Image 1 (cartoon, rainbow, N blue to C red):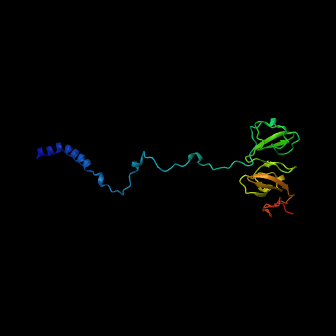
Image 2: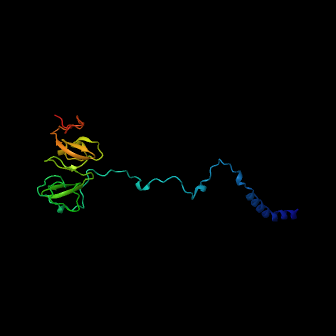
Image 3: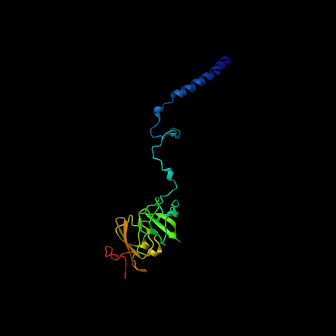
Length: 201
């Protein structure tokens, strides 16, 4: 009896090892149901086909450029002759006999004070000439329907221009008229003319 026990004990580890090995080979991967979700580890290293979000704009909103634009800090103000110019004036006017090469006469709005230039704005849609005695402005007709607008309804225009009627055509201002204090109607009563249609009695 003692001998047979010893035999079983000595064969025990071999039998256990064989049993473990046998179990390992008895697992059939074909029998796994197809509706069982894959374990989380199976996705490690796989590439997600979903397009990533644009992280460069994360937390940033699309912000439209300021209008009217700020003064150009790189502009050579000392090269502008403001003799006789007392208000914001388009560089294309004859008021400036010369203008620096760094400038753009068609689009620049020059602010003069005390005989010297204090600011040059680079208007994105051109500079709008106002009637004599009123400051010129950066043109705000770009993107607007053809028609007549009051200065008060145009972005960033000076209070002195609020009662001017401005005609926009093909994305640019073509002329302005003085309506008088509180005489420019934002909802023009005669949208097709005669000019100036926004002026009211």
